Each structure stands twice: as structure tokens, then as C-alpha cells.
Image (cartoon, rainbow, N blue to C red; front, top):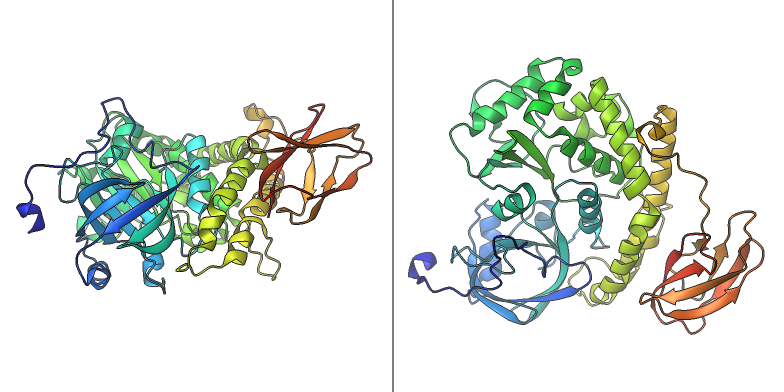
Length: 497
């Protein structure tokens, strides 16, 4: 009814030109936005809760102001599964549809944005880190950002933002947006016959759905169900950009993303290439454990989410696909899943988000949980690593050992074997009053310098031996780096609390 009452007059903000990319202001990892919603419906929370609980995607009308710039007549609804059901505070996950009531309306060129309450992620960066890895790896993945959400002037806390998979996304990433778009509900890729009704609980059609969409999709299911795994490589490559999946599989295995096999991904039929594109989605449950299981050839040992998927079995049991997977794993470990590639991003996020997380009264986590989610190694015997930073080192070592055990020669694809690390190490991180700097054995280094995030020199110090203590002294809370004056080793970044 609200749609019918609106006139054609709209409030447009930042409509992109044909060549402009949407979301360049909203999806930034160096700022915490302020998003203010005004909802006039008195019982808005109960209404949205009831709609989402019943599986209805209805939205209420609201006004939004992003960093002071207002947009009227947008749609607001609750979203999520576990993060919605198990959130014991009013801090629910939301979706903002800028064009729900006014079809031509955009914000920063976007139709919508997802606001995640990060119920299972005290760091607020699991999505940001994983999507950065995937995008850097050449996989089309959502972009991210951060915001403090206010509803009717009440602070609901710190949220992470995630780009919606829609026509905006496919048009900008694949240069076309007229193909079929599917969202995985719980898809194990098991072929159970030609009746499309048997698959509606596995995949949901979203955009540009046509009469041939189900036929195209069932062809892949049938192929996986009736073709011997050893013969699948060429057949799968003909209908799916398999490197999208293989790279995503490598990232999922490295980050122990055990909720991203049968769900938390999308498929897009690229009409230009005539193949499906695999799009990863939602990594809030990443970094929750470590294991060699995702790298084994025995599918009974892959964690349960993966062991039921025919597509994962095809990778493990097809020699060509398995070899390509290991090639991608080598590249991931050499270039992306490394401290050098990720520590700066993680440390900057910690400095940016810490004051906002501490001010989040509706969050289920406290300040200690936030710090642990970045830096602490879980030592309770469960084998789970809470801190994203130490997780990269620990799981990276596991990947290295698996590649050696499987006799995977990463140098055969042009990647040098990882040499013994000649770099500085600092313990503990983050630093409170003091920390110990460790130099490689036999180092001839004589002096180091400490610089802040802007590169300003804070301190220079002579060094001797292999270990020595660095006092905090006058260093203010924030991110810093220790660098070799002679440039002989990589810098080490650290946080001062």
C-alpha cells in the first residue's frame, strides 16, 4: 500500500554513471560510518521480528541518514539465520533496501546494503578479512565496511557492512547482469531426479529467472550425480568457472569456514561466457578452529559441511581438479594467507574499531573478547584459535605441513619454496608496557626505528644480540611498526594498548 501512495518524485543520491563503481564511499575499511534510521511505526521491532520469523521479506518504510546525508522512503527489514535467532539483545541484523519503495532510488549507487550484528564474531572483521583474501585472489566477493547504527536516536551498536549480491554486483563484476542468480539455501549438489520441485529447498532463484534456468541448473546436478568423478574435470569446466570454486575452496579450508559448503554462496549464470560463476558469501564463522581435514583426499575426513557436497567430492577425487586445487592453495599460502599480506589490514581494523566496540552496550562481547578475537591464542584444549592474527600463523604452518606431506611442489608452478623467515618478531602483541623483539639467528642488524601509522619516526634504538626488550615509554595507544634501519628485513607491525 505504501508503494502505491508514493509519487514518482524521488530523492536520488550519488547515481553512478555507466562507468562508475557503486559503493565506493560506503564500502571502506578505514572509517566507521554513522547510519541513523528513523522508523515511525510504533511497534517496528515486533513487526519486523514477526515478518522475518515467518519467512516474509516485507520491509517497513524509514528515513536513513548516512554520515549526515539523508535518504527518504527506504525499506528496512531484519535478516540472518543464527545471528537473528540467537541474538538475545535488540541488536538484530538488518537489510536496508534503498529502492524498496522507490525503484530508481540509490545510495552511493547501491540498491541495498546488509548490516551484520556479528553475533559470532567479536572482532567484527571475519567477513572483511575473508572477502579481502578472496578479492585479492581474483574471486568476485562482496566488499565490506563498518558503521554505528542508531534507530530513532538509540545506539544499536557497531555493525559490519556487506555488499549485497544483486544486479549491481553482477553487472560490475561480470560486466553483465541479465543472467540467472541463485542463492544457496542448503545445497549438497545431490542429483535426485528431474523434478525441479525436489531442488527448491537447495537453491532459490533471485534475479533474471527464465524458463531455461532450472534446465541449466539441473544439468550440473545430473552431471555430478551420473558422471564418474575421474571424468568430471572437462565437463565441469564447460558449465562452471571452476577456478572460482577452487580458489574459494582453498580460502574456506585455510580459514576453517565450516559454514560455507552447502550454504553461504551464490551462483550466477554468466550469459557472456555461458558458465556459472561461484560467489562466496558470509564468513562470520571463519577462524573457529584448525585442522588438516579440508586438505585430505578422504571425504569422510572433511568436516561435515563439506563431506556431503558432490562438488567438493569431485575436487578431491578428480586428479586434475585436485591438482589445480593444490596449485591455488600454494598461491594462496605464498601471496595472500600470510602475515605480510594480512597483518597490516588486521592491525588497522583493530585500531579503528576498538573504541566503537567498547562503546557498544548491546553487544554480547566485552572489551576482553574484542582483544582476544584479534590477538589471543585459545589454550583451553579445544584446538580453536580465537585470535585472527595468531590464527594466520598457526593455520599457515598447518597448510605448509600438509603441502609437504602431500608432496605438492609449489615451485613447479612458479612459486618459490617458502624460505626460513628472516624477519623481526615481537612478543606479546598487542603490547601493553613492554615487549621482546627477536632477531633471526646470525643477524648483523645494529639499529631499528619505530614509526607510527603515518610513517613518522618515534624512536631509534641500537640493538645487539638476538633478543632485547622494548619499553612502551611515551608511545600512545595505536598502531606502530618496527623497521630495520638498513632495510635488511621486513618491518613488524604492532599495537600499543
